[in-house]
Length: 621
Image (tube, rainbow, N blue to C red; front, side):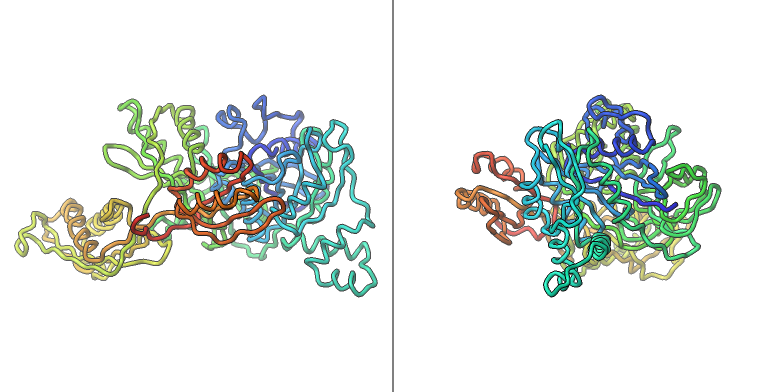
């Protein structure tokens, strides 16, 4: 038996969780179908997920089809939880991208397909809800080719679409669609179609499997998750078209932690996808962790809990298990080699301050937020002024869910300030400063510190280094300087956090037994501030890439509004009866465009945007 790890991805409300329930039920993994409406589904098991009827955290369920175990990873559909999707993509062998036959191609669907195609991950498309009024097939395929990717091929067809009597049948073997679609991506099929003799059914099947496996073509299946129509054809497609990920044959375990959940006893349970080797209970493992400042640290411990998805007692290559290690694991920890294979999504740009509604719960709130940040490292919880905690989030829905989670899981009521766009500072050039002990320059600290700050590599965060002789200071003094440097640079010359810097200790001294770590914690901010002022900083603001699909007759009005919001255009192309405008604009202006677009387009405009990095803030903007 081999294993496939398949992600279920979609825009919110397209039917991901319903499809997961149907697959588990049809293959005997559960004895009754759960419902999103009644809140009793297998994967959306959190109270908030059941209350809202949406997937918030990736969940893993498993079933067996023939000699294949299929692990299903049900991912969130709302764009505020894109970080959960990012982590799931890294551990998948393939994906099923859902569309609603009624709503069609939606904003998040386009984001997901772009990412799947960039990763060249084998992806099948499942058009759900064919039995709903308003469902479409031929028109929807045209939309998919125009708005998602032209490289799709239907393998099933529908009769009675849009009615309760909708039925799905496999496309005839002699139908022209597969050969035409394959000719666009497979040179051998193209040669056979153009020069003859035409490709045989066996050649078409082999080419379809190969081009699906390398992510260049996407088979389309129609069906209904609730009614069960077409689901068996989808499973056949998964088994025949998505190959299991290859292993290197290495005996040393290599894997990725892609999710972390709190356990019933307060311990953290990590979901580990193993790429090579084996892991057994009580085995001692060493994980590598990349810290926010770019350093790599080790996390070691024995496995105290090992629950392999599907029930085996030994975790083997290609499988997933819930693992507990006493030292505690975080999302992104790597067993074995630390690589950069993971897809990179831009970090969240919305910053909010959180305070306990009842002062007596301030300590519990801080602990809860740190625990939640372990589950989602992109939240970036950090101390702020007046006892508040600063959080980075993707959007307002994520903020609402976080507030509900604090109440239900931790018993803490919290108040969130209105989200504001987070600006960043980066050093302009190199700057140095030094302060000697009191008998030299009359400072009140019994310490000597010299610091240099300079620009670091892009996206490196903050890096601390030494040019002083190792052992010149007691370890506690070294740690005090390093910790204080990073804490001080949370606020730069313009009031924003400093990033992508390299801070180096270039001079140090102390007087035993008078000097203490407190002297170094007190003097470091003074010296660092002087060095930063000499280096200077530039202020950067986050940008969003955007697409706007609008009626043809409102192009002038919409582009004028976008230009007024400092948008930079990358393209304006004809899309049937619409224009498709692409570009980038400052994140702080996105909400303004979102509010104005419906009025400018009579409610017909479609808007999509996502973080795309940052740019230096320009005067007058």
